[in-house]
Each structure stands twice: as structure tokens, then as C-alpha cells.
Length: 126
Image 1 (cartoon, rainbow, N blue to C red):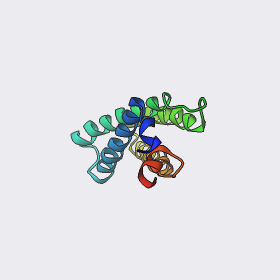
Image 2: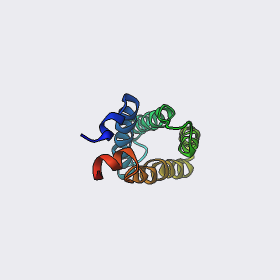
Image 3: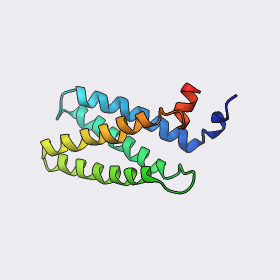
Image 4: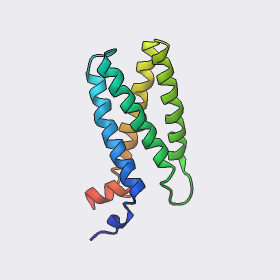
């Protein structure tokens, strides 16, 4: 058994589940029609998942806080901006903000988790 198995704390498991769920929900939101009841419903679910991912990251530390925690703060701020834009019917700004969060905070950051030195990368690639 790999040492990696011992590093999967409840916070890391919840963080990972929320992030992978946010990837799926976010992809569906990007592909589906905008402005519908379902878009709003799943949009709120996505925002809650993303807020959970960001907040749970503060419980994941090796040697104190790191640059990734700055991304978590930025993500939380941008979620507020994105929701505010939607509520003010600033559709273009809302779309750009939420797509930026999806790409930056989920896709790009998610790819970094696949590095062999990271927990998920080590679990997958050994």
C-alpha cells in the first residue's frame, strides 16, 4: 500500500468530491441554454460547490498557507462578483467571470493536481 492512502484526510476527500462535482456541473452549465430555471438552479449549486472547494482548501496545509490559498480567496471574491453580475442582469460580465473561474480555479488548477508530486497525481501515476 502506498503512503498516499494515509494522506487522504476527510477534508481532502470532501475538497476533491466538491471539485470533481463542480467540474461536471460547470461543464453542463457551459453547454446548456442560459437564463432558464435549470441554469439558475444548477448555477447556484455550482457556486456552492466552488465556495466549498475554496473554503475547504484552507484546511489543507503542509507548511502553512501557500499561493494556492490566495487563489481560493480570489475565487471566493470572483464568485461574489459573478453572482452580483447575474443579479444585476449584466449577462456578458457574468458569463466572462464564471467562465474565468471555471477555467482558472477548476481546469488549470485541477491539471496541477495530476503532477506526480501531488496527492492525486501520485495516487494515479504512482
